[in-house]
Image (cartoon, rainbow, N blue to C red; front, top):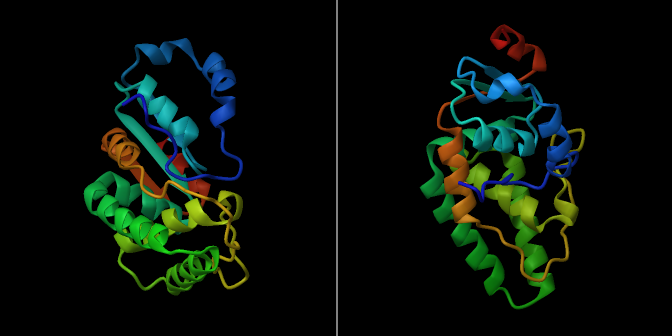
Length: 192
């Protein structure tokens, strides 16, 4: 499972800070399977996936975020990775089959509009979230006052929309993780 990394680009991601975080991590965690790991603002999950790979014996792992689309994505990857992969492959195929930048932009805008309706099933919403994240400007997640995703289309020649290996690896690592959605205070009851 060495290839596991965040499945989304996320503003404020901690991937480049992992060495500093690792050096500050308590040494008792290496042998303590009673350790509880709580991440109240999971975001893209760089620290989470690093932790899960390096401390697989941890029995209590709780993540939370106020972004319902994000926490839903963690649940979908945990519980339905193969169906998600099928949908992502389909989105990637349709997107890359388009012959022009303008046609790809129109497709992106159509997916964004459908995503913002929030009427799809959880797997479809998650596949659209990942698609938008991989094809929008700078991989941002931003919403307007109406809570509609409003990031403009990006200019990528060949974006990887479906990383099946990473999704399966993430699903494996998330199998025993409790996923919460809401205010960070929800996680306080889980902290020892």
